[in-house]
Image (tube, rainbow, N blue to C red; front, side, top):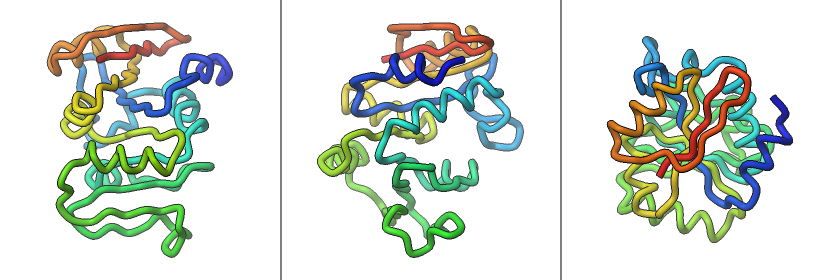
Length: 176
């Protein structure tokens, strides 16, 4: 799978978001993270999504479950109700943005970040991400090794596939 091909799909999008799902539409594996769901092709897709942005945004629960490291070329913003530990080596870095406490409106906070950052990628869990995207009027890129997983996730969350492709062993769909 060519990263240039994947970047062409994303051209012009200021705000992107993504989720990976299994065969039944679940966004978490038996360990409570998504690391075992997508395989090598999904990792290439995630790298393509992240390579074109200035900021990756996630929530505290996702940050902890996925054991986040700093993106290679983007800042990282984490919204959390409880204290966080910055990724190793970035404890005092301006590239790590920690937003603590209850947020009035995550979608409003993301709009504020869009005033500062040209391209943003959201990596929240589904229960947080879907309401944000509905409020902002954006869709989500859902990837899976199983077409049935994307279909099940969309059905469960009341969203529809707008565009879908298959690249090697990975299905990728833009859903809104």
